Image (cartoon, rainbow, N blue to C red; front, side):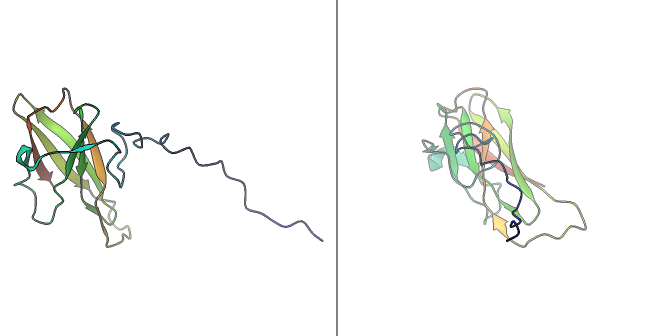
Length: 135
């Protein structure tokens, strides 16, 4: 009986929590779930008036308030990003952007809502988080 052909062996998957962005409260790659131990930001501390009506309005803090975990929006070949562009004594402004894929590339017609992590220079405390969508 001839030996059977098998697919080349692949290295085992890394253990949970060892992939970039998968550790609770550590900025990194987008993830689908809010990191364990995160605290939802109270509605009165969130200004999302500049976002489109259908955009998620979920913000959580972790790591003693030094990291914001924000529910973004992306679709097809796009990739959501978040960046704290202004931090002062009363508010933190975060720009949410969807980077588009290359033209001429086939893309799915789905919408995803990844959680994006943003590191702050100081704990959020009582400051207001202002979300803006950039194009």
